[in-house]
Length: 107
Image (cartoon, one colour):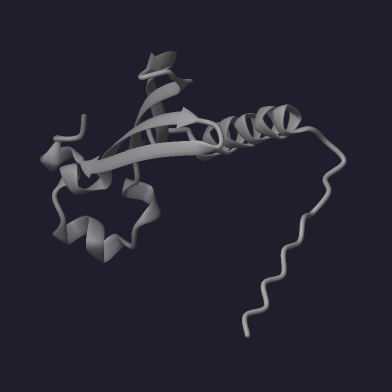
């Protein structure tokens, strides 16, 4: 005997309004984490269309040196605190690749 229950959460907003709110929240969080040479650097933020899929492509660089403990900063090279992220966001689906600066290989 298999019992499968399905439930839905009704939101007071549409899916399109939710997407706009999500993009705004991500942009605000990025802005708040950035400053003094640290944080998130956006290299590209442009629309894309590939195989009938439409969305937003972003290429960001995360500078994380101030986010790690001092003893780690002393032991690791500068490049260990820099990560590249490439994301293809076709809401509600998102494909993301991250790599440290020393292993720049995502495309």
